[in-house]
Image (cartoon, rainbow, N blue to C red; front, side, top):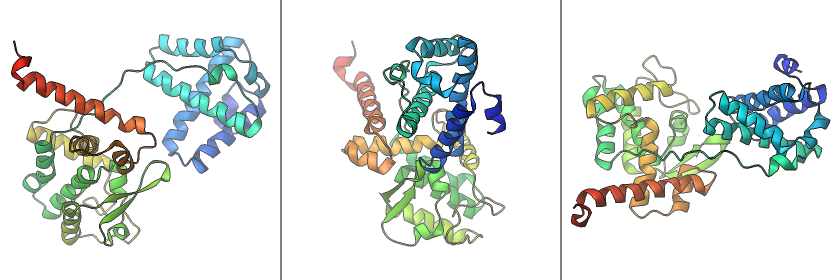
Length: 314
């Protein structure tokens, strides 16, 4: 039992199951350490609440008899403490994941939790950048950065985000070996899942320009993009770059590096791309995530109608 396990008001068997679940999330589900820690924290808070709510430590044998009222009381306490519906929904999802693990691995099930719906959360639609603005973002480093190789690097990274729909982490983890040639790029995304995306000529040219000018030559399996001191380029450096570009180009605060990925998807959809293909290109596990872009495109059309159509103005 770890130090944090020893502080939890649970018996040894339940603490062991929690530790085994955490190893499962890391080794078999291949979730990131931060995600595993968040899952574990949410579930641990539940058992801390349960000890206060029921007046004593919780055992593994107690879990099947927990009622809907127990789970709702936990969510109510969190909400009254200022926890948002979105965070509560995430915590409930983590708890359900733990109970599903117990059901599959140890035959311990709780029907009350399995049938419980989470709190409704407001839909946060993606905030893409307009086409012209996206083009300006990609070319801006050439005029704002005095060091040619740094300008080429920044332009290459931004072009990958917009031209291939990559996440920052995916772009910054790319290696020299992955750019050995060809028209396709193999990308490792969340959970270690791989996908293939087309490598457009403009993207390949931007990366080639950076590699030609860069004073650093990483090994074939080392991150290709380097900071000014030679270490791997950090996500924070790309975020700071976008902050500078927002000021220089007059873009809204929503123009973040991730917004370039949103723009990739939204502009493909507007050009007639189908959702399934866009889902594959983005590496979304669920189509419902990709479907958010249809709402963005519809919203853009409605705005355009309201602004431009003569019948929309009275």
